Length: 424
Image 1 (cartoon, rainbow, N blue to C red):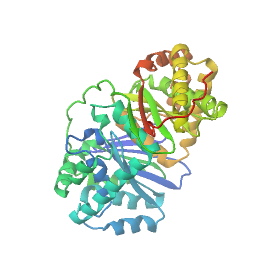
Image 2: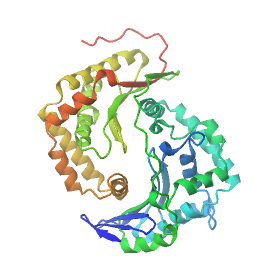
Image 3: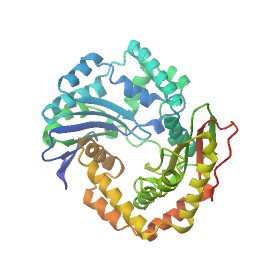
Image 4: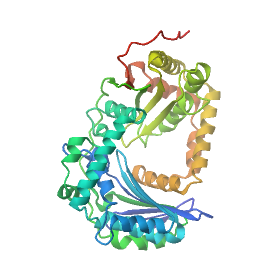
């Protein structure tokens, strides 16, 4: 069945549960096409950590009819891009290319998903690549601290499972185990095909239905457990030039309307050069190069975090300043001017991102995965505009409890510091 919606969207659900969602963009020359699977690192049980990410790598390593070189040459020949990524609740394989070549993109992605060879020799070679990726992540502290923070925030819950896995779990993966995982997790009713740009909905359905329509649905899995309380603060002592840290709290899930107030709070605290933390800690005091905040939401929960990097001797000062600003917002909320600026910044950011077909494709998929419907930009704007300052203040008082803050830090934390700057 095909449904037509606003902003020139169309949606079809195949008999086996595969969902196909498109948005035609007038004037676009390109199309962004993604196959999304609602399987991520949180769906991995003990002994399987890293399987989702590793499988993402392996699907690019050749199919029954194409070698990995064939796949790379096919997309390069038309000037396109082919890639994938793994998240905590989903995996995406996508192509970005001229609209005239949407058939090639659909053929490549469907072939990779359903006819991957998972050859043992390729698996062993790629295993070394992924092990290097794990080691690389821990050598880039400004990236690793975010993963460490997430694992701490969700300790004891599937959302806290490491995205890349660990050396032992990845080393134990075999071709047979990956095939089992592919059949068990990459089922028809967990697949969303999303495309935005120069795309004809009926044509795309006809392109993917013969392959994806033959997959078997899995049905509902076990319910996700409620998140336990976050873990304790964690610090990793490393001889780096700076201390990198994340400080944050739990937030609201994707489908909670309070998410709009959380996004505005995030924007005002650390969402740009005019935000409180940027102005106070970078502009007024010159203590950091980078400082910002981020709002993340999942199916059943979310988080609001602040991240920064600073010299070891300034770490205590910066951390105290951040905590002091959080205390102020927790106690007093935001004023009308801050909320209005946050609203315009948020709406403007989305409007500019909509110029990109890849952003539109991702937005289509996220709407389908979390809400089961398309949310027009006008509806987003209306929800942002209708969020009152009092609502933002209320969620600041609820979320920013100083006792609920969780800290993850990486750097030379045990080294004796120099005299700290006064906070007065």
